[in-house]
Length: 499
Image 1 (spheres, rainbow, N blue to C red):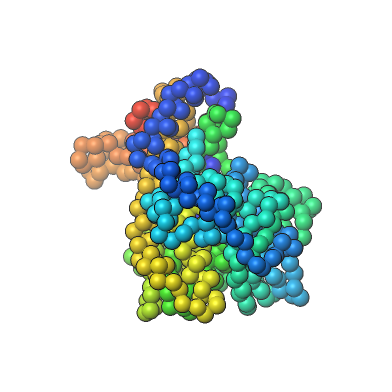
Image 2 (image 1 turned 60 degrees about the vertical axis):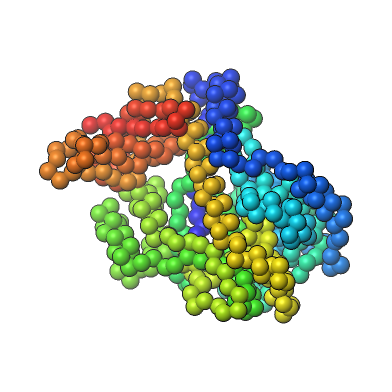
């Protein structure tokens, strides 16, 4: 599943939230998350020593592709740069070069660093710090595709036809050198102004064609506005930013790489894919009823992915409906195979088999996918040590995903509570995302049948907070709510519908 959303970051000028408070209560609460969730905030000495040895003894591959003018495109603050891209036109088609950081070159299988990364699973991003999967000497320096630096990479080269379909794939380990570190905002501004380089213009062109192919495959993007917490100059901020088109175009190159990685591994009959079943007919039926209730027109013959793309998230009802569409995106997992290939290896949201392979600095499983693909593309046997590790990865990644989701939600709740703590009793405009109704036979405004007040979820118009409310309102309604609770210690935020 891929999607776009909003960033939640607390305004420097927010009344009642002084810089002193930010560096005391809120900062302490955020740091406390590291202990509460038992995050691995430091690397053991033997791991750091092994990382330094790997860096000092690193041997670059013999293939030199430094002549390709790669660029990286990431959030402006990123320093752990996994991917670099270059696109050129070839006849009526394209040649896409996609360089992925050579993390396998720094991590010895069975070593201390390998063991530590298996315990971590992935990088954890918190407002006040980043807890990296690898020591920063690798993730933000020697292994990162920084501009003007010679780096080893797993270089994917895709030949595309006029429609954007892949007709040939080459994978090699090579030396590359990125020319520039670009940001999503900067690239979008250049494209909108009409002064972007040819590579960036072709990124848009290829991205749009790949989106059209995704539609044809029956893929679907769940565009739920997501929340993030950022720290700017030591001040935590909340704001809503719609995702930029360039983020989707860039993501299409990553998705294409993951699909080709899946194809290679399936052909070699060994690998690990990111899989997700298609929505169950029952869930689709319920979602159709929800759409009708909220007044959204869904043609009987229109695929659900097309319907989701048609939703206008500025409309309260359709925003609520997009949240409810999450019920269609269930069961994502990692599926391992070695010898016998399972019958259904699809990722329903993408509409094709797919593998995580483009973020090895930040995600454990990608390193192993790169290794498997590098052998598969040459028709060689995958080493036994890699094959033995594959069955362990689903559990490791599952535990890591659960932990990261809990930590990120707790960080958001903490900042939201701090942002709103001084505003208890104030009224806000909001949109209900999930609705509540009186229990059967109960008057409006009463408690439910179990004596507890009905609760739903809402999104404030400003600041960009998603929280719980009590009272009675259908989903997708513009409502006025009063802030009842905002407690930093418990991370609790609660609103009440103003009758």
